[in-house]
Image 1 (cartoon, rainbow, N blue to C red):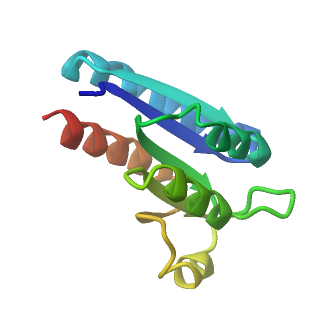
Image 2: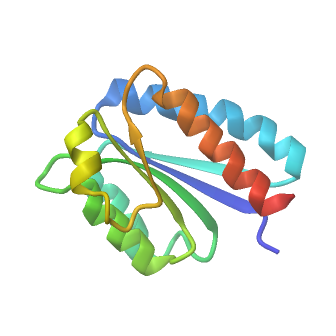
Length: 139
């Protein structure tokens, strides 16, 4: 059994990326002890770096949960990352995030697993999704 969980944070806003990554890392640290697993967080402010990592095969067969902002710059949307990740690892769980409720409606039938509205509660909600993902994998 693979006991590594890879967490991808794809958010072009450096402050929000750091906030979300730190929140998930704290949760991951306690989950590692609880489930005897390893949680690796990869944080990207440049979507092209994330795309390169996915295409390289570096993520392998690991259990992956990704938190992807919809508007990530350079003409790339979160939908691009979602499709690429699902094509390379169908079992990955992808949460699409946006400050816009219109994106939630527009992407309702997208390939992502969940949508998170980026508001004051979003980092805590992301933490809960991570905890649930890991609990489901290792319980």
